[in-house]
Every structure is written in C-alpha cells, then in structure tokens.
Length: 281
Picture 1 (spheres, rainbow, N blue to C red):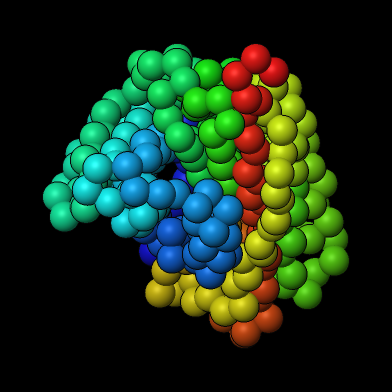
Picture 2: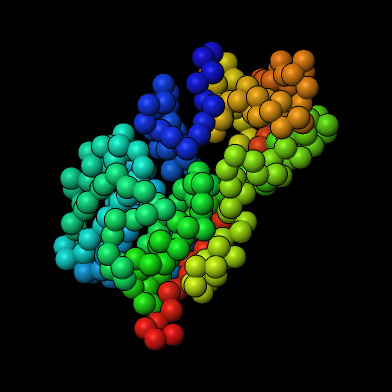
C-alpha cells in the first residue's frame, strides 16, 4: 500500500500529498476526542448573536462553521489559514452559514485583523506547526477585545502511547516523542504558560484522549487520521532512537501486531480557554 501518510502541516500548498492532508483534516475532525473538546469549547465560549469569532489556522473551516450557528444573522466568522488549498475548501463549505463568513489566507504570526476586534478567538491543532506559537498567541490576544475569550485546542505528542506487545519498541517511541525538534510538537501540555505569557488569564482547562484499538495495515496505510508507521520509523531514525538497519523490522512488528489484533494507540489533546484583561487592567 502506498505510504502517503507522512503527515505534516508545516506547509500544505505544494505538498504532493495535499489531497491526503486535506482528507486527514476531516478524519481528525471526526475523532471522538476532537468532538469532545469542541463541544466543551462551545459550552465555554457561550457565543451570542451578533458577536465576532476568529479561527486561526481554520483548515477546512468545519469547526468555525459549527460555532457560526450560535452567532445569528448579525454575527461574523473569520477564518485564517496559511494554506490557499485549505481556504478554498473552507470557502466551498461556508455557503450555508447563518452569519457573515470570511475565509482568507493569512499568517498566524502577523494577523491582518484589527486590534480588539473579536469577541472570541480560537485555534485548534495549529500551534504545534508554527515556528513561534508564543507569537501567534500574542497576536490572538491583540485582536480579541478586552474581556474577550481565547480558546486553544492542541496536541501533546509526548503523550503518544503505542502498544503492540513489545515493551522495547513502545519505550523507543515514548523517548523519541518526548523531545521537540523541528516544531513545538508538545505544545498542548504547555498552553497555560503560553497564554499567561501573552497577558491572558486561563479560566478553564480540559483534555481528551483519542484511542485506536484496531487497524488493518492491508486496508489503510495509517490508523484513521494519523501517520503511517513507516513515517514514525523515519522519525525515530532521524532522532537516533532507532538504528536505520532496524527500520523495516520496526514497521513489520507493528503491522504484524495490527493484523493479529494486538495493536492499540492513544494520544492526548488539551484545551484551554483564557480571558483577555478588561480595559485599563
């Protein structure tokens, strides 16, 4: 089976597997953990008719469009993403929204939006792909109004737990993902510190764990919404946690376990809502 699932959203446009990346966005949106955190977020934001919402790193726009239901005809949703392909997809889905909707290509580190303009700002699984997540959250703090809310949902890849009945293999994976190299992969566990650094005050936090209890590698190159095991092996080789000569055995061990119903995996995502200080604070 073709190994196209070396997933990454550092740069989507121009990726030869952009179609896979976009389809995977839909897969991850359907994860039970994602749905649980989005429902929690909606309850925390308590958006009202006529308010303005900004979604930073909006992807295909499904989360923002779901929240648009709470804003009424007088409200507005703005979605920003670095990928023109994602924005095109979001625009295609936004035609039936109840409120005004605008999706635009933009830079999370330098938002082209007015200061203190939005009642709420959200970002989901975006910070982990940015070169400077702290700068992105500072920008969100800039564009939200005094007393407005900033909602962050993100993954902590150091929580990945892979069980195929091989203790040494599982430990290698844990050790490799504990450190961050090219990107802030474990930002989910640091959200509170990041928002405080931007002058925001956390008011609610939660987490949810996505689990995979079954996967057939002969039918799909990767568990739903996730990376391939060949991609994981390459990552471990790069970090020195797996000798290159053991790459094929590593992948084969996982695939065999999956075929024999001995595969399980879990990954935790974190969510936090913070409030901007009132005027004059």
